[in-house]
Image 1: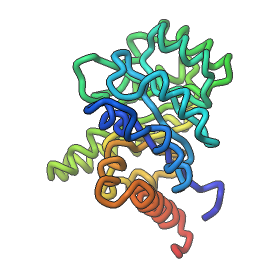
Image 2: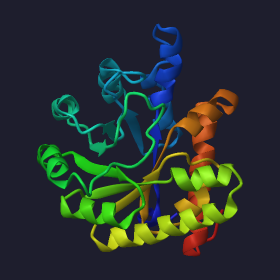
Image 3: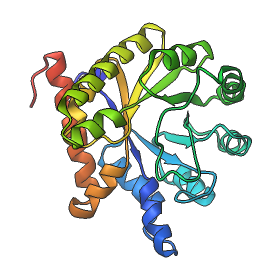
Length: 257
């Protein structure tokens, strides 16, 4: 594949820690999962250190940084505590996400349009420290335009509504959500933003998103870790990588080996 056309794959390892924490102790180890993901072809590792530390812990972040040679994408809420931690570790990337204590997973995109001043001031020191800052948002014009106004270089479009509609057999809704993702990816790129996407992507839903030429990176976690129970982490990552590459090649007219 043409290197300029290659879509990056970030693997979110949060739920390795979820399994560990369900029983306590040290296994399974998220840092080991990060190393395995790197060996299987991941371009980066994503980890979300939540306020309540329900899965990834502070010690995990340190161990992951020590274990990998590929970028760490540190997902975090826009809080003073998380900013201090990010500025101490200076990961390659930070992704600002909404966070509620009662939610099981990130349920929607960050509200940027109504909170521009605070978020702009929050991300400024992270950018100055050399972190690539992305904002996890719904595929909505007002949120994308707000992200551009506050100086966020990257947006990650929330693909959950598209994936949920597919899983529930609501095909008209799925197609409408995908059309929205496509249009908003085009808008984001036109505003000078790098475009990423993620949330809920599976083997069945990844190829249309991967085929979008505006999208430079996908971040996938829960499904990959779930599939790893049955086929192994290496196999599940390699299969996702292959589907992404096929989609990119088909969309660009390159021959698929």
